[in-house]
Image (cartoon, rainbow, N blue to C red; front, side, top):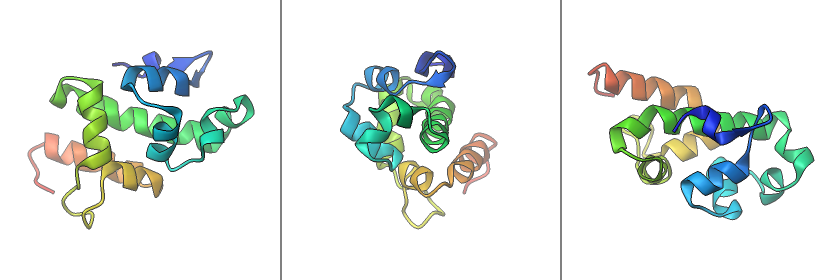
Length: 116
């Protein structure tokens, strides 16, 4: 799924992400490390922090989706698969800790044949 599929009127739209990933607002908020209000209230959705986390998750999911064949499987990997070299943390935990760039670098290294 392209990044634009998660967007609406120039912003990442949690509602579209929830539909694509077949999840609830509570689960999406937890996956982002945000409170439920951050993805339900219009003023909070537009905040820099919420948009940054939504973008980071979308970038990670889009990078791994071809490997898994669907956004749903990519989302399951994002939430549950411990990444080697990151003390058993998942991509979700790293994004929550503002380390999305580390996740993207790890994925690029794996794609390049470098074992992390």
